[in-house]
Image 1 (cartoon, helix red, strand yellow):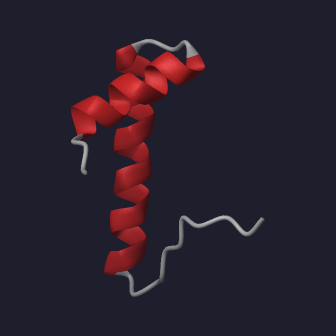
Image 2: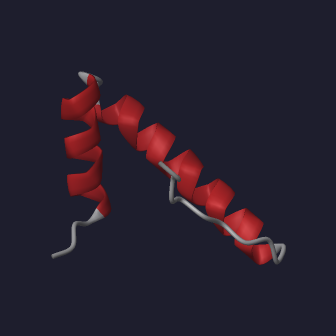
Length: 50
């Protein structure tokens, strides 16, 4: 199963009771930071140790 950015934005907005516009801005900024880090040769990990 996979979801696109629009669906991710919708789900996060619903979970946090935030507007789609606000969540989309945060998702875009997050993806841009990940892209820039990868472009510079840094590794990116989104896993949390529990």
